[in-house]
Length: 151
Image 1 (cartoon, helix red, strand yellow):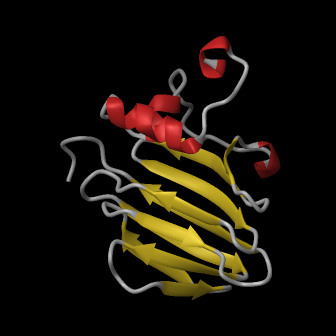
Image 2 (image 1 turned 135 degrees about the vertical axis):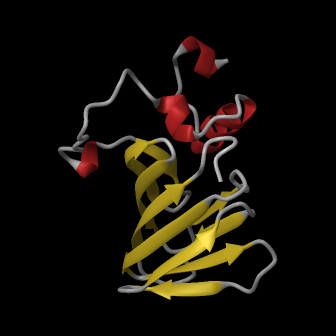
Image 3 (image 1 turned 90 degrees about the horizontal axis):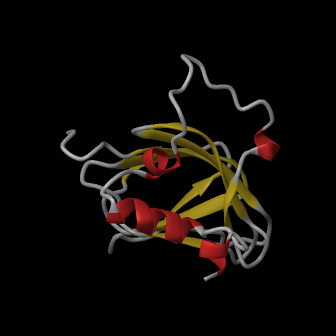
């Protein structure tokens, strides 16, 4: 009710569910008019926060153009972001800039990615990012979610 009245903003999970309902990507859902040849995010701290963790973490969508998104994330100790599976063929790549991020992908064993390390994985399975450490973790995340029918 608050969303319809303009009194609240949708959560990332809600936006992803709406996009899935229309069988489009998040970037397609949020797309405005035609984009210029170069899109510059003049101040990353002013990019929209689309996820907030219970312990103070946040996820900002810096730039995106279907089928690619670039995110800046912070996870406070104890924060966890659970993501549903994306479209078939989707991939995510991340680079950790501080702390450590634990990835849980499908039923595979957890993988810890530490500051200065990168990871690439299939995002067409449910996956989770979490901070099991005692200090904040930060990372950049690129999401490639092919449009329906693209390989």
